Amino acid sequence: MAHPSSPARRILVAALLAAPLAASAATASTTRPLNVREGPGTQFLVLTVLPVRTSVTVRGCINGWQWCEVDTRRARGWVDSRFLQPSVRNRVPIIRNPKQRERQPRPVG
Image (cartoon, rainbow, N blue to C red):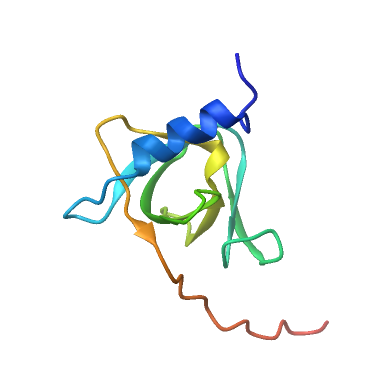
């Protein structure tokens, strides 16, 4: 079995998530414990960690397919797409210019 970040797997995820839907969302599940972040990158704060096989609603993915914006019962944020297993029946739109939340200062103490 190929490693989750293998080029073939990334191409498969991109192909399955490529075409926009009228509803602008698709479902997927996590393939490992997965950080949900404030923005599309590891430099953003982790909002929550999703367990394996958690169902998420994918709102869209940025170009390059590295990061997807998702909704869960726990939070709305960004996840690394390498660890999502999309539903074959779904497609996700590309987010061209992702809006990012203002970072709030964390209280000290």
